[in-house]
Image (cartoon, rainbow, N blue to C red):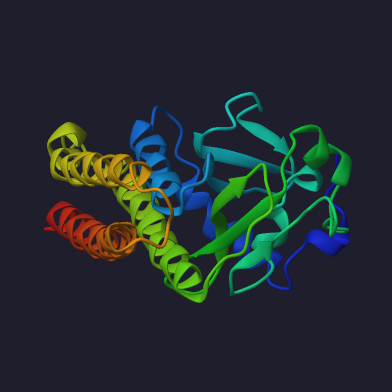
Length: 240
């Protein structure tokens, strides 16, 4: 099925050319771990890393939406819309304000209400995919959450860069991923602990509850910076 012209970026030819380096096949469980962490940071049940191809959207990381195929038609995915902008694309309530650029029926059948996607941009500015967080209930996205999504999209892009570099070398991948997995795992454990503590509070505005929420935001900022630093170091190591 050909992609409708209204879903094509102005630089579509260059965008697809840039995408080729990242169409690396094979198992990539670290993407699922990364989006699982992203979902916890935003407290949503669904998070995805996608690559927007010529006619399909390829979900490289998928937590919470495992019932969909690995690839779906471009006209059925909100990620096709998110790559058209340099900024985050946000739909707060897809039932009351659906996206008219894609097949709204496909989105409705999955029961999706909230979508926020930040483009994955290469060093030369082409948007090859998205990092998105999704919920089955409407919600707002605070300004600081938009900034966090952008930071995490940069991390996802670095993961794609690292996988692309690994595909051209014979370096043992497991050793390179060890520190990255450890950082993700430690952060998930801390977030789980904070979420459990928060549940014990009668209301979300008690002093303790507010302190836990501050800790969650601080954890989000730390993990984004930590992952960026570790992945950049791994890429540099491979290029030596």
